[in-house]
Image 1 (spheres, rainbow, N blue to C red):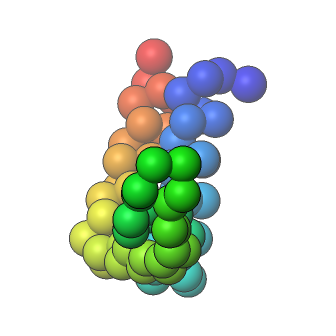
Image 2: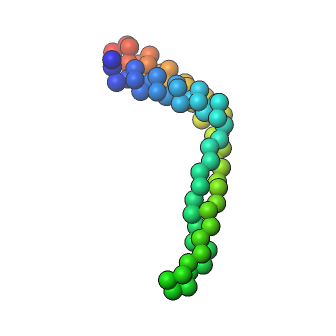
Length: 72
């Protein structure tokens, strides 16, 4: 298989997945206080939204990569 076909399909799959999930969350550990060898930390959960235009752009670019790869 051509590399352009693989990249194009991957971009399309990621774009469709972005429509399904709309956001993703992750946990980060932050140091609140550090006094000598003692430190206080807290785990915070952060959520990042995936804009709809990014999902659409991924699908469109994936289709363009596939079409451009077939023309060569």
